[in-house]
Amino acid sequence: MSERTLETDVVIVGAGPAGLIGALALADAGLTVALVAPPAPPADHRTTALLSGSVEAIDRLGAWTGIEKDAAPLRTMRLVDGTRRLVRAPEIAFHASELGLEAFGYNVANGVLTERLGAAVATRADRIARIETAATDVALTESRATVTAEDGTVVTARLAVGADGRQSMVREAAGISVKTWRYPQTALVTNLQHSQPHFDTSTEFHTETGPFTLVPLGRGRSSLVCVERPAEAERLSALDDGALGAELERRSRSILGALTPTGPRQTWPMTGLRADTLARRRAALVGEAGHAFPPIGAQGLNLGIRDVVALAELVRRARLRGDDVGGEALTARYQSARRADVATRTFGVDLLNRSLLTDFLPVQIGRTVMLQLARDVGPIRKLLMREGLRPRLFQSV
Ligand SMILES: Cc1cc2nc3c(=O)[nH]c(=O)nc-3n(C[C@H](O)[C@H](O)[C@H](O)COP(=O)(O)OP(=O)(O)OC[C@H]3O[C@@H](n4cnc5c(N)ncnc54)[C@H](O)[C@@H]3O)c2cc1C
Image (cartoon, rainbow, N blue to C red; front, top):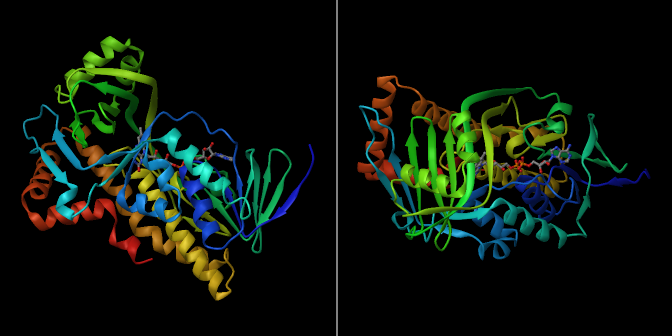
C-alpha cells in the first residue's frame, strides 16, 4: 500500500447525497476539498422527494439540469387518514399553486441523484480531490483534521465534514455523543407502474402502522414507501409481483388503479438519531451523521441539504474574513445556525409518527384538530406549506 499525502482546506468523509452536495457547495465557496468515499455507495433503491429549497440549492451548484430530466414534479400533496379509528382526521390536499409555485419539489431515484451529483463533482477536479476508498481513521486536534483512507492516502485539512451517515466515524472522532432509538416499524420501498394517472400528486396515507406513501416518479409510475410492522414488511417484500400489486392496490384504495411492482424491493428498519451537537473540534456533521428519523413528509435529506448549504455559507464568510475555516468560532456558528431547524424537524416527525402508532384517544383528537386547522384556516395552511418547504430559520443564516 503506497502512502500519499494531501493538504486541503476541507476533508469530507462520505459521498451520499449530503457529502456530494457538500463537496460542490464548499468548492464553489472557494475552498479546496478532499472527498473520501468508495466509488460505488451501497445499493439504494429509494427515491427522494426534493423540496423546492433543495432543488434551488442544487440548481445554484449547476447540478440540477442533469437531474431534472429524470425527476417528477410534485404539484399536490395529499394526506389521507387511513386508520380505522373512531376519531379520524379529514383528508387534506396542499397545492403548490397556492404558494404561486410550479411544484413543491421533485421526486428522483437516489441512484440517479448520486450518479448525477458525482458527475458534477468530477467537473470540479481542480478543487475537489476524490479519494475513492473508505476512511479508516479520523484524528482531530486543535489545529488540524487528519483523515486516513483505506488506500493509504492521508489528508490533512482545517475542517473535517462528517457526511458518513448514521455510523459516522467523524462524529465518533469528535467525541460527539448521539442519542439513537428504534421504532417498531420497517419501510418497504419499491417502484410501481399504475393504470391510472397520478396527476403529479403525492399521497400519504396515515395508517395504524405508519405512513403508506405513493410519490410520482414519471408518467404512469410512482415510488412506494410502505411503513409497516417489521414482520409484515418482510412478508410483503417476499410476495410475488401479482400478489404484492394486488395488496398495494387494496391499501391504496385503487386511487392509481391496478399496480404492478417494478424493480428491486428494499426494506429499511425505522430508527431515529440525534447528535448532541453538529460541530466540535474541527468537525462538522451534515445529513444523517447528525440526525435521522422516519420518512414522513419528505424531511430527511431536505434537512441534510440545509445543513450543507448553511455550512458552506458560514465557511465562505469565514474565508472572506481571513478566519480559520475550521476554528472554534466557525463550529460554534454552525451549531447555532442549525440547532433549531434540526430539533424541530426531529421532534415534529417523531411526534407525528408516534401519534399514528398510539391508540390513546386524546392524541388522536389532537392530531385530528391539527389537520382540520391546516385544511380550513388559510394562514395556518400557508404557514405549514412554507415551513415544510423552506423554514425561515434557514434563510437567516
Ligand atoms: C424509506 C426512506 C425514504 C426516504 N425518503 C425521503 C424523501 O423523500 N425526502 C427526503 O428528504 N428524505 C428522505 N429520506 C431520508 C434520506 O434518504 C436520507 O436523509 C439521506 O439518504 C441521507 O443522506 P446522507 O448523505 O446524509 O447519508 P447516506 O446516504 O447514508 O450516505 C452516507 C455515505 O457515507 C458513506 N460512508 C460511511 N462510512 C464511511 C467511511 N468510513 N468512509 C467513507 N465513506 C463512508 C456510506 O457508504 C454512504 O455512502 C428517506 C429515508 C428512508 C429510510
